[in-house]
Length: 322
Image (tube, rainbow, N blue to C red; front, side):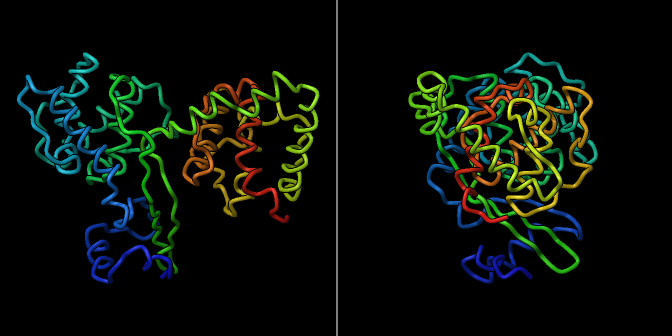
Protein backbone atom coordinates (compact mmCIF):
# COMPACT_ATOMS: atom_id res chain seq x y z
CA UNK A 1 0.00 0.00 0.00
CA UNK A 2 1.18 3.50 -0.82
CA UNK A 3 2.44 4.95 2.51
CA UNK A 4 1.02 8.39 1.63
CA UNK A 5 -2.42 6.84 1.68
CA UNK A 6 -2.30 6.42 5.46
CA UNK A 7 -1.41 10.06 5.96
CA UNK A 8 -4.73 11.13 4.50
CA UNK A 9 -6.51 9.93 7.63
CA UNK A 10 -5.97 11.26 11.10
CA UNK A 11 -6.67 7.90 12.73
CA UNK A 12 -6.46 4.26 11.57
CA UNK A 13 -10.16 3.89 12.35
CA UNK A 14 -10.88 6.61 9.81
CA UNK A 15 -9.01 4.65 7.16
CA UNK A 16 -10.94 1.44 7.86
CA UNK A 17 -14.27 3.25 7.79
CA UNK A 18 -13.36 5.02 4.55
CA UNK A 19 -12.44 1.80 2.76
CA UNK A 20 -15.57 0.10 4.07
CA UNK A 21 -17.77 2.88 2.71
CA UNK A 22 -15.92 3.28 -0.60
CA UNK A 23 -15.20 -0.02 -2.29
CA UNK A 24 -12.67 0.33 -5.10
CA UNK A 25 -12.50 -2.63 -7.43
CA UNK A 26 -9.30 -3.97 -8.98
CA UNK A 27 -8.20 -1.66 -11.80
CA UNK A 28 -10.64 1.06 -10.75
CA UNK A 29 -9.75 4.65 -9.91
CA UNK A 30 -11.86 7.04 -7.83
CA UNK A 31 -11.44 10.58 -6.56
CA UNK A 32 -12.76 11.79 -3.21
CA UNK A 33 -12.66 14.82 -0.96
CA UNK A 34 -10.11 14.10 1.75
CA UNK A 35 -11.77 13.52 5.13
CA UNK A 36 -9.48 16.21 6.58
CA UNK A 37 -11.01 18.71 4.14
CA UNK A 38 -14.64 17.89 4.88
CA UNK A 39 -14.98 20.46 7.66
CA UNK A 40 -13.69 23.34 5.54
CA UNK A 41 -15.86 26.37 6.56
CA UNK A 42 -16.09 27.67 2.98
CA UNK A 43 -17.15 24.22 1.80
CA UNK A 44 -19.88 24.15 4.43
CA UNK A 45 -20.97 27.64 3.38
CA UNK A 46 -21.28 26.51 -0.24
CA UNK A 47 -23.24 23.38 0.71
CA UNK A 48 -25.72 25.40 2.80
CA UNK A 49 -26.13 27.98 0.04
CA UNK A 50 -26.86 25.30 -2.56
CA UNK A 51 -29.37 23.61 -0.26
CA UNK A 52 -31.15 26.91 0.39
CA UNK A 53 -31.12 27.69 -3.36
CA UNK A 54 -32.65 24.31 -4.27
CA UNK A 55 -35.29 24.60 -1.56
CA UNK A 56 -36.22 28.13 -2.61
CA UNK A 57 -36.42 27.08 -6.27
CA UNK A 58 -38.61 24.07 -5.50
CA UNK A 59 -40.70 25.64 -2.74
CA UNK A 60 -43.91 25.54 -4.79
CA UNK A 61 -43.41 21.81 -5.33
CA UNK A 62 -43.03 21.17 -1.58
CA UNK A 63 -39.62 19.56 -2.02
CA UNK A 64 -37.19 20.01 0.86
CA UNK A 65 -33.53 19.05 0.60
CA UNK A 66 -31.55 18.51 3.79
CA UNK A 67 -28.45 16.71 2.49
CA UNK A 68 -26.78 17.05 -0.91
CA UNK A 69 -25.42 13.51 -0.77
CA UNK A 70 -28.58 11.79 0.45
CA UNK A 71 -31.29 13.74 -1.38
CA UNK A 72 -29.97 14.09 -4.94
CA UNK A 73 -28.59 10.67 -5.88
CA UNK A 74 -31.86 9.19 -7.22
CA UNK A 75 -32.50 11.99 -9.72
CA UNK A 76 -35.84 13.17 -8.30
CA UNK A 77 -34.62 16.58 -7.09
CA UNK A 78 -32.40 17.10 -10.15
CA UNK A 79 -35.38 16.28 -12.39
CA UNK A 80 -37.59 18.91 -10.74
CA UNK A 81 -34.74 21.44 -10.61
CA UNK A 82 -34.06 21.22 -14.35
CA UNK A 83 -37.74 21.37 -15.26
CA UNK A 84 -38.16 24.42 -13.05
CA UNK A 85 -35.02 26.31 -14.08
CA UNK A 86 -34.80 25.42 -17.73
CA UNK A 87 -38.39 24.60 -18.59
CA UNK A 88 -37.12 21.20 -19.72
CA UNK A 89 -39.52 18.32 -20.19
CA UNK A 90 -37.57 15.13 -19.61
CA UNK A 91 -38.94 11.77 -20.69
CA UNK A 92 -38.38 10.01 -17.36
CA UNK A 93 -40.50 8.71 -14.51
CA UNK A 94 -41.08 11.16 -11.70
CA UNK A 95 -40.14 8.56 -9.12
CA UNK A 96 -37.53 5.84 -9.69
CA UNK A 97 -37.49 3.27 -6.90
CA UNK A 98 -35.01 0.68 -8.18
CA UNK A 99 -31.31 1.27 -8.82
CA UNK A 100 -31.78 0.34 -12.47
CA UNK A 101 -34.53 2.95 -12.89
CA UNK A 102 -32.49 5.54 -10.99
CA UNK A 103 -29.49 4.90 -13.21
CA UNK A 104 -31.62 5.29 -16.34
CA UNK A 105 -33.18 8.47 -15.01
CA UNK A 106 -29.81 10.01 -14.09
CA UNK A 107 -28.46 9.16 -17.53
CA UNK A 108 -31.24 11.16 -19.22
CA UNK A 109 -30.89 14.05 -16.75
CA UNK A 110 -27.10 14.35 -17.03
CA UNK A 111 -27.27 14.11 -20.81
CA UNK A 112 -29.72 17.04 -20.77
CA UNK A 113 -27.39 19.02 -18.47
CA UNK A 114 -24.40 18.45 -20.77
CA UNK A 115 -26.47 19.54 -23.76
CA UNK A 116 -27.77 22.71 -22.06
CA UNK A 117 -24.34 23.68 -20.79
CA UNK A 118 -22.73 22.73 -24.12
CA UNK A 119 -20.18 20.48 -22.45
CA UNK A 120 -18.49 17.52 -24.05
CA UNK A 121 -17.77 14.36 -22.12
CA UNK A 122 -14.15 15.23 -21.31
CA UNK A 123 -15.29 18.43 -19.55
CA UNK A 124 -17.75 16.72 -17.19
CA UNK A 125 -16.71 16.52 -13.55
CA UNK A 126 -19.54 14.13 -12.69
CA UNK A 127 -21.05 10.90 -13.98
CA UNK A 128 -24.11 8.74 -13.50
CA UNK A 129 -22.08 6.42 -11.28
CA UNK A 130 -20.62 9.16 -9.08
CA UNK A 131 -23.99 10.87 -8.50
CA UNK A 132 -25.72 7.55 -7.87
CA UNK A 133 -23.09 6.58 -5.30
CA UNK A 134 -23.62 9.88 -3.44
CA UNK A 135 -20.20 11.32 -4.25
CA UNK A 136 -20.13 14.82 -2.74
CA UNK A 137 -17.38 16.21 -4.99
CA UNK A 138 -19.26 15.27 -8.17
CA UNK A 139 -22.57 16.49 -6.78
CA UNK A 140 -21.08 19.87 -5.90
CA UNK A 141 -19.50 20.30 -9.34
CA UNK A 142 -22.82 19.41 -10.97
CA UNK A 143 -24.90 21.82 -8.87
CA UNK A 144 -22.42 24.68 -9.26
CA UNK A 145 -22.44 24.21 -13.05
CA UNK A 146 -26.26 24.17 -13.15
CA UNK A 147 -26.48 27.25 -10.92
CA UNK A 148 -23.91 29.21 -12.94
CA UNK A 149 -25.79 28.45 -16.17
CA UNK A 150 -29.41 28.97 -15.11
CA UNK A 151 -28.93 31.51 -12.30
CA UNK A 152 -25.59 33.28 -12.87
CA UNK A 153 -26.37 35.97 -10.30
CA UNK A 154 -26.47 33.45 -7.45
CA UNK A 155 -23.86 34.72 -4.96
CA UNK A 156 -21.82 31.57 -4.45
CA UNK A 157 -18.75 31.96 -2.22
CA UNK A 158 -15.64 32.29 -4.39
CA UNK A 159 -12.40 30.36 -4.03
CA UNK A 160 -13.98 27.24 -2.52
CA UNK A 161 -11.33 24.57 -2.84
CA UNK A 162 -10.85 21.16 -1.29
CA UNK A 163 -8.06 18.67 -0.97
CA UNK A 164 -8.80 15.61 -3.05
CA UNK A 165 -7.26 12.17 -3.14
CA UNK A 166 -7.37 9.90 -6.18
CA UNK A 167 -7.14 6.23 -5.25
CA UNK A 168 -6.37 3.54 -7.80
CA UNK A 169 -6.54 -0.15 -6.94
CA UNK A 170 -3.63 -1.71 -8.84
CA UNK A 171 -2.19 -5.20 -8.83
CA UNK A 172 0.48 -3.91 -6.45
CA UNK A 173 -1.94 -2.31 -4.03
CA UNK A 174 -3.55 1.07 -3.59
CA UNK A 175 -1.88 3.93 -5.47
CA UNK A 176 -2.81 7.47 -4.49
CA UNK A 177 -2.25 11.04 -5.57
CA UNK A 178 -3.39 14.26 -3.90
CA UNK A 179 -4.34 17.64 -5.34
CA UNK A 180 -6.16 20.86 -4.55
CA UNK A 181 -9.35 21.30 -6.56
CA UNK A 182 -11.47 24.41 -7.00
CA UNK A 183 -15.25 23.95 -6.82
CA UNK A 184 -16.07 27.63 -7.35
CA UNK A 185 -14.01 30.11 -9.35
CA UNK A 186 -10.85 31.61 -7.97
CA UNK A 187 -12.17 35.14 -8.46
CA UNK A 188 -9.16 36.80 -6.90
CA UNK A 189 -6.95 35.36 -9.61
CA UNK A 190 -9.51 36.10 -12.31
CA UNK A 191 -9.83 39.71 -11.23
CA UNK A 192 -6.08 40.11 -10.92
CA UNK A 193 -5.65 38.65 -14.37
CA UNK A 194 -8.22 40.97 -15.93
CA UNK A 195 -6.82 44.08 -14.23
CA UNK A 196 -3.12 43.49 -14.61
CA UNK A 197 -2.41 40.69 -17.01
CA UNK A 198 1.25 40.46 -17.93
CA UNK A 199 0.43 39.15 -21.37
CA UNK A 200 -2.02 41.95 -22.08
CA UNK A 201 0.76 44.32 -21.12
CA UNK A 202 3.21 42.46 -23.33
CA UNK A 203 0.97 42.51 -26.40
CA UNK A 204 -0.20 46.11 -26.04
CA UNK A 205 2.85 47.93 -24.73
CA UNK A 206 5.88 45.79 -25.48
CA UNK A 207 5.28 43.97 -28.77
CA UNK A 208 9.00 44.20 -29.48
CA UNK A 209 9.62 41.75 -26.62
CA UNK A 210 7.00 39.28 -27.81
CA UNK A 211 9.35 37.29 -30.04
CA UNK A 212 11.84 36.94 -27.19
CA UNK A 213 9.16 35.49 -24.90
CA UNK A 214 8.02 33.11 -27.64
CA UNK A 215 11.58 31.86 -28.03
CA UNK A 216 11.82 31.16 -24.29
CA UNK A 217 8.62 29.08 -24.44
CA UNK A 218 9.70 27.25 -27.60
CA UNK A 219 13.04 26.37 -26.02
CA UNK A 220 11.30 25.19 -22.84
CA UNK A 221 8.82 23.00 -24.77
CA UNK A 222 11.48 21.46 -27.02
CA UNK A 223 13.63 20.70 -24.02
CA UNK A 224 10.94 18.31 -22.80
CA UNK A 225 9.21 16.97 -25.92
CA UNK A 226 12.46 16.54 -27.81
CA UNK A 227 12.96 13.13 -26.23
CA UNK A 228 9.74 12.09 -28.00
CA UNK A 229 11.23 13.08 -31.34
CA UNK A 230 9.11 16.23 -31.57
CA UNK A 231 10.15 19.78 -32.39
CA UNK A 232 8.07 22.92 -31.91
CA UNK A 233 8.76 25.95 -34.08
CA UNK A 234 5.44 27.81 -34.12
CA UNK A 235 3.37 28.27 -30.97
CA UNK A 236 0.28 29.56 -32.77
CA UNK A 237 -0.24 26.56 -35.02
CA UNK A 238 1.41 23.61 -33.29
CA UNK A 239 -0.61 23.81 -30.07
CA UNK A 240 -4.00 24.24 -31.72
CA UNK A 241 -4.85 20.52 -31.84
CA UNK A 242 -3.86 19.88 -28.20
CA UNK A 243 -1.53 16.97 -29.00
CA UNK A 244 1.81 18.57 -28.10
CA UNK A 245 0.24 20.22 -25.06
CA UNK A 246 -0.94 16.84 -23.77
CA UNK A 247 2.42 15.19 -24.44
CA UNK A 248 4.21 18.08 -22.72
CA UNK A 249 2.00 17.76 -19.64
CA UNK A 250 2.69 14.02 -19.57
CA UNK A 251 6.45 14.59 -19.73
CA UNK A 252 6.45 17.25 -17.03
CA UNK A 253 4.00 15.54 -14.68
CA UNK A 254 5.68 12.16 -15.17
CA UNK A 255 2.85 10.00 -16.43
CA UNK A 256 1.87 8.20 -19.61
CA UNK A 257 -1.24 9.29 -21.46
CA UNK A 258 -3.26 6.39 -22.81
CA UNK A 259 -3.63 6.79 -26.57
CA UNK A 260 -7.29 5.82 -26.22
CA UNK A 261 -7.94 8.95 -24.16
CA UNK A 262 -7.07 11.47 -26.88
CA UNK A 263 -6.67 11.87 -30.62
CA UNK A 264 -3.02 11.62 -31.66
CA UNK A 265 -3.88 12.80 -35.17
CA UNK A 266 -7.10 14.79 -34.79
CA UNK A 267 -9.07 15.01 -38.01
CA UNK A 268 -11.74 17.51 -36.99
CA UNK A 269 -12.33 20.56 -34.83
CA UNK A 270 -14.33 18.42 -32.39
CA UNK A 271 -11.36 16.10 -31.90
CA UNK A 272 -9.03 19.06 -31.41
CA UNK A 273 -11.42 20.51 -28.80
CA UNK A 274 -11.49 17.15 -27.05
CA UNK A 275 -7.69 17.16 -26.78
CA UNK A 276 -7.48 20.74 -25.55
CA UNK A 277 -10.26 20.24 -22.99
CA UNK A 278 -8.49 17.14 -21.68
CA UNK A 279 -5.27 19.12 -21.32
CA UNK A 280 -7.08 21.92 -19.47
CA UNK A 281 -8.71 19.38 -17.14
CA UNK A 282 -5.32 17.84 -16.34
CA UNK A 283 -3.82 21.25 -15.59
CA UNK A 284 -6.77 22.15 -13.38
CA UNK A 285 -6.57 18.85 -11.47
CA UNK A 286 -2.88 19.46 -10.81
CA UNK A 287 -3.63 22.96 -9.51
CA UNK A 288 -1.67 24.61 -12.32
CA UNK A 289 -4.60 26.32 -14.02
CA UNK A 290 -6.70 28.56 -11.81
CA UNK A 291 -8.23 30.89 -14.40
CA UNK A 292 -10.89 30.39 -17.03
CA UNK A 293 -9.79 29.31 -20.51
CA UNK A 294 -11.95 28.96 -23.61
CA UNK A 295 -10.67 25.86 -25.41
CA UNK A 296 -11.91 27.26 -28.72
CA UNK A 297 -9.38 30.09 -28.39
CA UNK A 298 -6.55 27.56 -28.31
CA UNK A 299 -7.96 25.63 -31.28
CA UNK A 300 -8.32 28.90 -33.19
CA UNK A 301 -4.64 29.66 -32.60
CA UNK A 302 -5.06 32.53 -30.15
CA UNK A 303 -1.43 33.14 -29.22
CA UNK A 304 -2.18 35.03 -26.00
CA UNK A 305 -4.30 32.20 -24.60
CA UNK A 306 -1.74 29.58 -25.58
CA UNK A 307 1.09 31.53 -23.98
CA UNK A 308 -0.86 31.94 -20.75
CA UNK A 309 -1.30 28.16 -20.58
CA UNK A 310 2.37 27.51 -21.36
CA UNK A 311 3.38 29.98 -18.67
CA UNK A 312 1.51 27.88 -16.07
CA UNK A 313 3.79 24.97 -16.93
CA UNK A 314 6.91 27.09 -17.40
CA UNK A 315 6.57 28.80 -14.02
CA UNK A 316 6.55 25.43 -12.23
CA UNK A 317 8.95 23.41 -14.36
CA UNK A 318 11.43 25.92 -15.80
CA UNK A 319 14.22 24.42 -13.66
CA UNK A 320 13.31 20.79 -14.26
CA UNK A 321 16.07 18.82 -15.99
CA UNK A 322 15.30 16.63 -19.00
